Amino acid sequence: MEIISQESLTKHEQIIRYIHSLQVGTRISVRKIAKEVGVSEGTAYRAIKEAEAAGLVATKERVGTVRVEGRSHHNIDKLTFAEVVNIVDGEVLGGGKGLNKALGKFVIGAMQLEAMVKYIEAGSLLIVGNRERAHVTGLELGAGVLITGGFGTADEVRRKADELELPVISTSYDTFTVASLINRAIYDRLIKKKILLVEDIMVPAAGAGLLKPQMTVADWQALVERTGESRFPVVDEYGRLCGMLTSKDVVGAENNERIDRLMTRNPITVGPRTSVASAAHMMVWEGVEQLPVVDNARKLVGVISRKDVLMGMQFIQKQPQIGETIEDLILSGFEEERDAEGRLLFRGAITPQMTSAFGNVSEGVMTTLMSNAAFRAIKYEKKGDIVLDSMSTFFLKPLQIDNEIVIRPQLIELSRKFSKVDVEVHYNHFLVAKAIVTVQLIDQL
Image 1 (cartoon, rainbow, N blue to C red):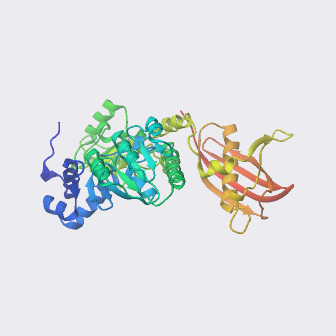
Image 2 (spheres, rainbow, N blue to C red):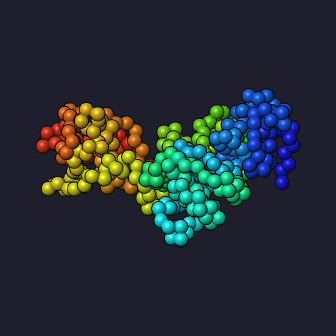
């Protein structure tokens, strides 16, 4: 195991390590951190903000900034009680230490207490009005309590909430509004869950082949033979990214030549929370096979290769559709058909949700319809992932609510890497909109 002395760490890294060492629930202040680590308050403030982004600390109303248990991104579909407080504009009456706990489901307590008990589980959220017996019972069964109508609760309930570290929250909203708000938040989380992120598929820095600036071409060659790869990140003694070294960089170089003289400095990078689709587009656009993944301090946290991206995209395409995005809602009313000559077309009507404030169809909606029609036409001819490269649109005549339109995509060009599609939109046999769509194609393994 490599031992890193406190002196070898930067001030920023010392603060993060110090925060890691604190017990969950410990209050944190800029002044206290600055004094403990021996840094300026400005440095302490920036490090605390990074720790908050990483999920190590959280700022809670009437409590302040506290050390919290880091949450895994794999539980992104689950809300925490702290997020519920924000969603319903609530006030925490007790059990503040449990705000970072995730809730599995919510139960509306619009029934007799004896019947309500059957549905309450540990980790759930009981939504109920001014019923103190229900408040106590919910806490005893391991549930948080959300009191609607702006009511408070008894001191006994507050003490039990603090003892069990389960929050009791009060909101001025009624039960129906609260349920709708929480449902919407959970639904949004489900949409996010199906978006694959770089951190989901990257190879962590600890498992990747790494080089140091003072190493030589001979060291690179040994790493190539051991891993079978030919491109590696170059990091300094603190783990920060200095550059990238590939086989092209070492052509003609002597075995004893230092890596820092050959490496590509300031390489293109991505962050852990970058979507895999964006990383794929960046790789195609820049013509690179591997991207280093860095945090806010440019410390290397992993690497992602073209192969990782393709396999990740294949995986996510096999998963069931969960939740509806704006695009899903726009396309839901359009049916795919074939005309008498077998050409692809899409038919559907303009709904009120698709219109602008003036009653005409939104240009953004029309752009979405035309681009997705182009994507589907390409997918019939070539398997793989599609990234929009450019799009020229022409809106010739306005469309109104309930107008039934026909969208006709026609392939103009299709190669291994690019495709161009002409898309026409017709209403009553008149051309009302047109687009030329160019895309990049990413072959699947």
